[in-house]
Length: 318
Image (tube, rainbow, N blue to C red; front, side, top):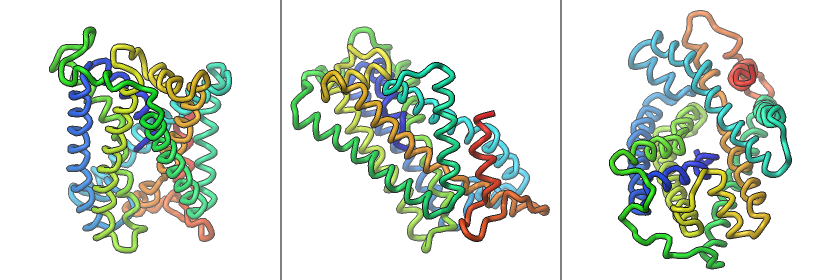
């Protein structure tokens, strides 16, 4: 969940709303909506502890036809789109570190997707280890930003004043809430992915509801704190775009090289999110059909559905 969205969406939200209080309201509102969804998915995962997430739940409630259409929709549209968006977001920030041509940006995005797919194909243990390390680095980097910003006094608390009134140039309410909620929704996207691992949990009835709910609460807290730090460093009226917002905050913290430092942090964050997008759905979907597909076969040594991972990962590169 914590990927390029937290570095791009606060800029548009802050510029549109023009009010720190309304920015907080939007984050908390979307966090509450995600938490409601997490509770629902948690109960479903506890009742149907199988890999596949939404595919399994739709199949049990509405029948295999609806689940089959949902599976192909995810394979051809949603998951490739999310993967491609994360890959391009990663590559655009790699361009801050190394000069890249337009084709170079696409090559970096595709290379990152293929490399992480290869790691997951090799084996579950290697993929899970990489995911844990990237998650730890991502959260550690965000914690470092917060501690440095507050400890160094690089920002100004006057950026939060006025707390409620909108700044000049911001969109009028309630129209400003629509793009802000869309941006927050994009940043929260992905919380449902945890439900795909219900079949691998030792005690899914106890673990899955807690993991989904606690994950959404932690992410909401991280987003609120990170946005507050960004506003502490850069006032809303100086916000132009997501990239410049992050670069301005980086310069305030780390000096002239701040843009490059922030770019490296974003790259790590997006790699962690790409590593989480594993193809649990593709290992379960073919099993529910009368005719089994090769995409459901797991390799004995790696315990991974290799063909399913190839299909899920390589589709965005076509």
